[in-house]
Image (cartoon, rainbow, N blue to C red):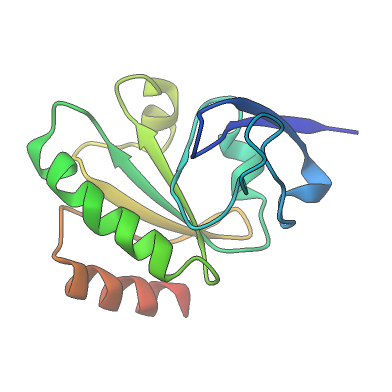
Length: 144
């Protein structure tokens, strides 16, 4: 059985999740909160590929803590993740700590938002948007 490790969005405890359970409603072993409940998941080298294999579309925010537009966009991304929890899984990749992932996807400006379906990128946008515009773009991207 192959597993991947993902941090809990509530307590940040690391959890091993079997690949077969990516689409399930897995709970944190430490705090018992849902691991995939509409809060953005922190993407890492250890869990990103497994998360992309989800049958649920994946929305990725490539960001950095020093980037003011990224920090300003964070609440929009989190609100949208909560609003659209049943339509997609939301992941945040810190390009400073996960440079290998940023290099792999040729991230040259941040924030960059990518949408994946069945592990394949279907859309991308650069720059922070207000919530209404972001939701409108994302709704269209999820239809692709």
